[in-house]
Image (tube, rainbow, N blue to C red; front, side, top):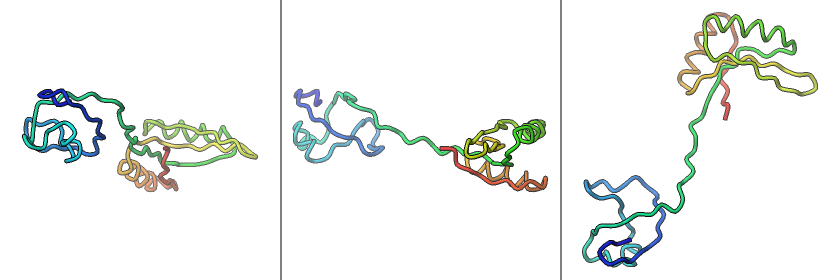
Length: 132
Protein backbone atom coordinates (compact mmCIF):
# COMPACT_ATOMS: atom_id res chain seq x y z
CA UNK A 1 0.00 0.00 0.00
CA UNK A 2 1.25 3.47 -0.89
CA UNK A 3 1.02 5.27 2.48
CA UNK A 4 0.92 8.65 0.73
CA UNK A 5 -2.36 8.04 -1.11
CA UNK A 6 -3.74 4.76 0.35
CA UNK A 7 -3.78 2.94 -2.99
CA UNK A 8 -3.02 -0.80 -2.91
CA UNK A 9 -1.72 -3.46 -5.27
CA UNK A 10 -1.05 -7.19 -4.86
CA UNK A 11 2.34 -8.29 -6.16
CA UNK A 12 4.48 -11.41 -6.14
CA UNK A 13 8.01 -10.86 -4.90
CA UNK A 14 10.39 -12.89 -7.07
CA UNK A 15 13.86 -11.70 -6.15
CA UNK A 16 16.09 -10.35 -3.40
CA UNK A 17 16.16 -6.68 -4.42
CA UNK A 18 16.17 -3.77 -4.01
CA UNK A 19 19.82 -2.97 -3.72
CA UNK A 20 19.45 0.66 -2.63
CA UNK A 21 19.73 1.46 1.08
CA UNK A 22 16.47 2.49 2.72
CA UNK A 23 14.23 0.79 0.18
CA UNK A 24 12.29 -2.38 0.95
CA UNK A 25 10.77 -3.34 -2.42
CA UNK A 26 11.06 -2.57 -6.13
CA UNK A 27 7.84 -2.69 -8.13
CA UNK A 28 7.16 -3.42 -11.76
CA UNK A 29 6.04 -0.42 -13.80
CA UNK A 30 2.51 -1.87 -13.95
CA UNK A 31 2.29 -2.22 -10.14
CA UNK A 32 3.80 1.25 -9.64
CA UNK A 33 1.13 2.74 -11.96
CA UNK A 34 -1.66 1.10 -9.94
CA UNK A 35 -0.58 2.88 -6.76
CA UNK A 36 0.45 6.11 -8.54
CA UNK A 37 4.14 5.68 -7.86
CA UNK A 38 5.66 6.14 -11.32
CA UNK A 39 6.10 9.92 -11.20
CA UNK A 40 7.60 10.24 -7.72
CA UNK A 41 9.64 7.04 -8.10
CA UNK A 42 9.44 6.11 -4.43
CA UNK A 43 7.11 6.50 -1.46
CA UNK A 44 6.57 5.10 2.03
CA UNK A 45 4.74 1.78 1.73
CA UNK A 46 3.09 -0.78 3.96
CA UNK A 47 3.64 -4.44 3.08
CA UNK A 48 1.21 -7.20 3.96
CA UNK A 49 2.48 -10.74 3.40
CA UNK A 50 -0.33 -12.83 1.90
CA UNK A 51 1.55 -16.11 1.52
CA UNK A 52 5.12 -17.17 2.16
CA UNK A 53 6.84 -19.13 -0.55
CA UNK A 54 7.74 -22.71 0.12
CA UNK A 55 11.50 -22.88 0.33
CA UNK A 56 13.14 -26.00 -0.98
CA UNK A 57 15.06 -27.83 1.69
CA UNK A 58 18.73 -28.47 1.02
CA UNK A 59 19.59 -32.05 0.12
CA UNK A 60 20.64 -34.40 2.92
CA UNK A 61 23.07 -37.22 2.28
CA UNK A 62 24.33 -40.35 3.98
CA UNK A 63 27.14 -42.77 3.33
CA UNK A 64 26.01 -46.35 2.93
CA UNK A 65 28.67 -48.65 4.33
CA UNK A 66 26.90 -51.99 3.97
CA UNK A 67 23.64 -53.81 3.30
CA UNK A 68 22.80 -57.17 4.81
CA UNK A 69 19.98 -59.68 4.93
CA UNK A 70 21.08 -60.60 8.45
CA UNK A 71 20.05 -58.00 11.04
CA UNK A 72 22.72 -59.12 13.55
CA UNK A 73 25.46 -58.54 10.95
CA UNK A 74 24.13 -55.02 10.35
CA UNK A 75 24.01 -54.31 14.08
CA UNK A 76 27.58 -55.58 14.54
CA UNK A 77 28.82 -53.22 11.81
CA UNK A 78 26.83 -50.36 13.33
CA UNK A 79 28.46 -50.92 16.74
CA UNK A 80 31.90 -51.10 15.14
CA UNK A 81 31.36 -47.85 13.22
CA UNK A 82 29.89 -46.02 16.24
CA UNK A 83 33.28 -46.27 17.97
CA UNK A 84 34.65 -43.81 15.42
CA UNK A 85 31.68 -42.11 13.74
CA UNK A 86 28.49 -40.40 14.90
CA UNK A 87 25.11 -40.65 13.18
CA UNK A 88 25.35 -44.36 12.33
CA UNK A 89 21.94 -45.86 11.58
CA UNK A 90 20.33 -48.98 10.24
CA UNK A 91 17.52 -48.67 7.71
CA UNK A 92 15.37 -51.76 7.32
CA UNK A 93 14.00 -52.12 3.79
CA UNK A 94 11.26 -54.75 3.62
CA UNK A 95 11.13 -56.51 0.26
CA UNK A 96 11.00 -60.26 -0.41
CA UNK A 97 13.66 -60.47 2.27
CA UNK A 98 14.30 -57.55 4.58
CA UNK A 99 17.53 -55.73 3.78
CA UNK A 100 19.36 -53.85 6.55
CA UNK A 101 21.31 -50.86 5.25
CA UNK A 102 24.02 -49.48 7.51
CA UNK A 103 24.46 -45.76 6.88
CA UNK A 104 26.21 -42.81 8.39
CA UNK A 105 24.22 -39.59 8.05
CA UNK A 106 25.92 -36.42 6.87
CA UNK A 107 24.21 -33.10 6.13
CA UNK A 108 26.02 -32.11 2.93
CA UNK A 109 27.57 -33.76 -0.10
CA UNK A 110 31.11 -32.56 0.57
CA UNK A 111 31.21 -34.01 4.09
CA UNK A 112 29.59 -37.24 2.90
CA UNK A 113 32.19 -37.62 0.12
CA UNK A 114 35.03 -37.01 2.59
CA UNK A 115 33.62 -39.67 4.90
CA UNK A 116 33.26 -42.16 2.04
CA UNK A 117 36.89 -41.55 1.09
CA UNK A 118 37.99 -42.14 4.68
CA UNK A 119 35.98 -45.37 4.87
CA UNK A 120 37.56 -46.66 1.64
CA UNK A 121 40.94 -46.43 3.38
CA UNK A 122 39.50 -48.84 5.98
CA UNK A 123 38.66 -51.36 3.20
CA UNK A 124 34.94 -50.60 3.09
CA UNK A 125 33.11 -50.07 -0.19
CA UNK A 126 30.89 -47.12 0.77
CA UNK A 127 28.84 -44.90 -1.49
CA UNK A 128 26.94 -41.65 -0.97
CA UNK A 129 23.14 -41.64 -1.14
CA UNK A 130 20.72 -38.75 -1.11
CA UNK A 131 18.09 -39.11 1.62
CA UNK A 132 15.55 -36.52 0.44
